[in-house]
Length: 110
Image 1 (cartoon, one colour):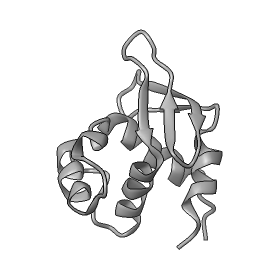
Image 2 (cartoon, rainbow, N blue to C red):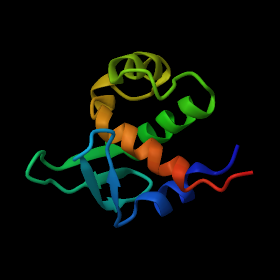
Image 3 (cartoon, helix red, strand yellow):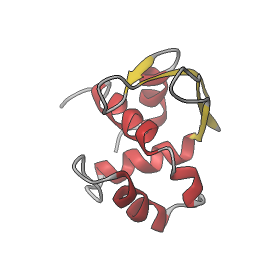
Image 4 (cartoon, one colour):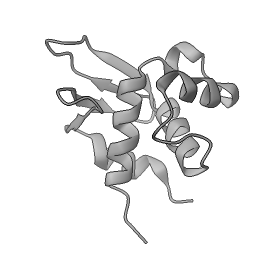
């Protein structure tokens, strides 16, 4: 399995990523090994997500435990079962989906 963190940094650092909904965008203003911070906008406040949680979501897609057609609640239920983090940390499901999409868009294809 490729090293996830460097690709994640490349995909997010100082970039605006799109959410699944048409007009949702998230601007990453900080990422390090501890957390990812998104700036607020007119539709939502700032969000801080543990980097380890984002990696758990990416790994869940890689391991085919969750899929794109799953709802946010379904993903949280499955990923949260094995997580070291509280389910509360998985609550930014639209941000998490955007992170996963950005990661896979920046992953070198074989």
